[in-house]
Structure formats: structure tokens, C-alpha cells
Length: 127
Image 1: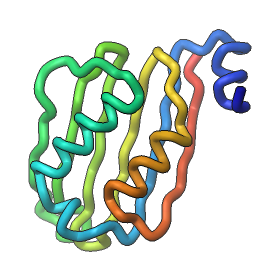
Image 2 (image 1 turned 135 degrees about the vertical axis):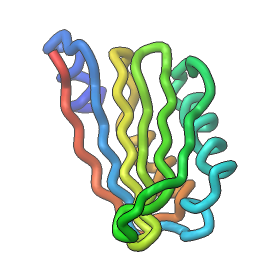
Image 3 (image 1 turned 180 degrees about the vertical axis):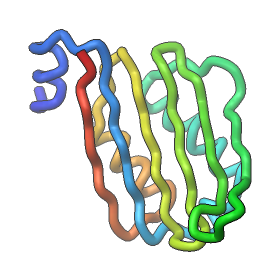
Image 4 (image 1 turned 90 degrees about the horizontal axis):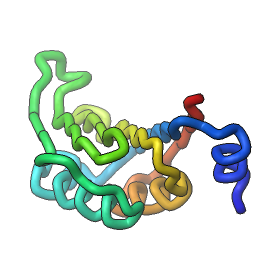
């Protein structure tokens, strides 16, 4: 059992938030709403999260520094959200759920899907 999973159950956590920061992503993928939707669908299947409603994906931002797609997907146990920054080819994705999932699986899958050169992961247990 990994330390995060042990801590989740030992502390009787209400939920787990994992933030994944991706750098130097494939620019075509982060600018493609269909690919972002496919990512959400595949991620939910991988970590066994039931989607609630459609994935919302909107391209916006007046400031070039932050312009790009933003995504939100409600899941039965909370939500997945993300923003994809065109100027820096970066992505910032959050997965929050009261049902446990393995953060390392999310990070590996997400890094591979967006072909990121570098990734940082942070987690918070909610109690």
C-alpha cells in the first residue's frame, strides 16, 4: 500500500485532491477540444470514476499568457478540472474525489497523454 493510500484511510480523509502541473506539452493536443474530451473519458475509465453530465470545454482568455482551453467534468464523487495555457504549452489539472484513486496512476497517464516533458504533482487530503 502506498503512503498516500495508507494516509487516506488511516486519517479517514473525506477526499483527495491531486494537482498535476505539466510543462512543454504537445501543443496540438492541448489546443484540441476533442483530444481533451478523450483524455477526460480515458482518465475516468482508468481511475474508475463515473462521469456526471458532459465534459465542459471552453476556449477563452483575453490575456495571451493564460489563453487556452479550460475543462470541467463532474464525477459522481466530485470533479476533474483543468486549464491548458497556449503560450507556455503548459497544463494544470486537478482531480478531487471522496473516493480514493491512485495519484501516481493519474500523473503517469496524464504526462503520457499530453506528451509533457516535465510534470509536478501535489496532493491534499481533505478531512
